[in-house]
Image 1 (cartoon, rainbow, N blue to C red):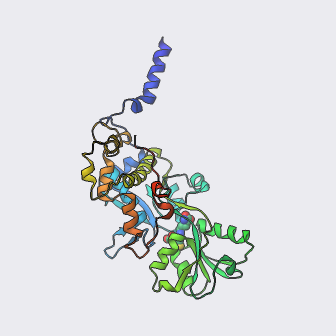
Image 2: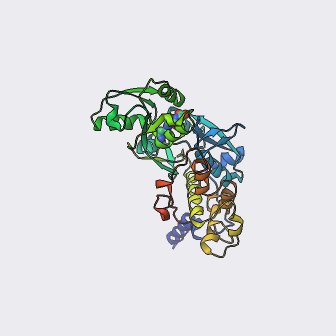
Image 3: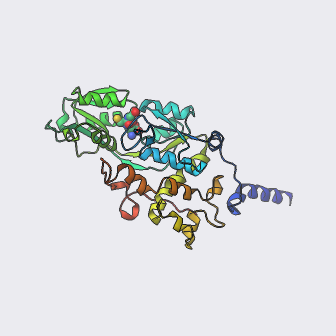
Amino acid sequence: MRNRFLLLVALVAMFGVVGIASAQDTVQVGPITQRIIERGELICGVNTGLAGFAFQNDAGEWEGFDVDFCRAVAAAILGDATAVSFRPLQAGERQAAIQSGEIDLMSRNTTFTLSRDAVWGASFGPTTFYDGQGIMVRADSGIADIAGLEGLAICVQSGTTTELNLADAMSQNGISYTPQVFAEADATWEAFVQGRCDAFTTDKSGLVAYQGSSEDPAAYAILAETLSKEPLGPLSPQSDPQFADIVRWVVYGTIQAEEFGITSANVGEFTSSELPEIQRFLGQGENAIGSLYGIANDFMITVITQVGNYGEIFDRNLGPDTPFNLPRGLNALWTDGGLMYSPPFR
Ligand SMILES: N[C@@H](CCC(=O)N[C@@H](CS)C(=O)NCC(=O)O)C(=O)O
């Protein structure tokens, strides 16, 4: 009898929160979320400057696709998308920034790989941008494909998947080349612009960003070949799996909002929707959503109001009204033939 009672107590302890969750339940947040709340801001690691993804505008404010995901997490936890302190990181500084815990979150064109997951001690969130590595040459070089790079010099940044993939792709194709390796992105690009390399390689998103912000975009051409898979997304120290879950559901929430057609302009109309799945998604009524993570139950209303849905974030930073005009491609919703797909908010 006593054993049965103890078993019951243990089961209630294990499943109580899930079994009887309601919007009123208070769930203890994890250590990273706790320190963000105490500090009143999120510390987010970003690129040192990559047009469209993370850069400081003329007013000194951070902007970009990656920056918006930092803002979305701050909106979810603190109710304020501006409560973010940005830490610019070179490629080679990322591992230490995650391992030391000096940042809460990283949203910096970072490829999700097995060794980073394991060795950096990271928790990767959902992919926000499906990318692949490409190669840029001078438009008048006559180089049409990677075979045309035989014997030439290629500028590449160290501490990146780019450097490793380049070596793999060239040896697979039996092409010899001279890597010119730099620790800093700007030095890598400048060396190419000054003609010290015949080609420059990084993620295709990075190539488009550099080309779009160069003095003469028409002087450069991006080869059609794609050398690798580069799924880019946010990551956090694995010391707080519950914070990693918040990051995960904030990203999925932006994708789900686009699928529902909920935008920063119309989210107010959706709060009175009678559709159960919309009520749940927006944390209305008795539905426990954010409260299961110890944050505002209607956190997605704040995220959508202050930052927008995935499509708005993409268009604002990379879409038709920007110098990049990137097609959605793999980054379209699954309903439009892309890979953006959110699990259910239930
Ligand atoms: N996605 C790749 C490449 C990321 C990367 O760091 N790319 C360079 C492109 S040049 C960059 O953004 N550098 C900027 C910097 O280090 O500040 C990775 O995760 O390793």
